[in-house]
Length: 150
Image (cartoon, rainbow, N blue to C red):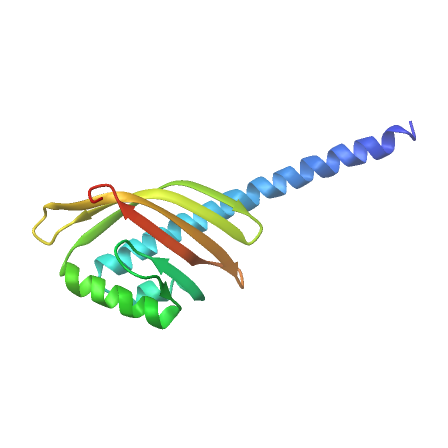
């Protein structure tokens, strides 16, 4: 019986660990889905400062057709210009997958942009890396591409 004790303890710890990991994954996924909806709401409200607040200080936004925006000041500037250029455009984000481990997560999904007049402006794919900072999930790297443009 004594020989089985380490095995039973090991199985118990593995079960406990996988249960904790599953809870971490589902908690991260829920928080990241909520964060993406906050991003969508900030964009649709035309609020560049609220968008930038979703990113860590050393974040990088890699939008198509331009150089990366590095840091919150550059990200705010990027989104201010994009909002002005879009003048009333709206975005709908769909999170398709979140993979998390520890303080890091990757989100994969799609987006649809609608022009101010209601016409279809664009659609495409995105991938974002999230980082947990002081218990809060924030965007660390953000990249997307259009499925309509080369």
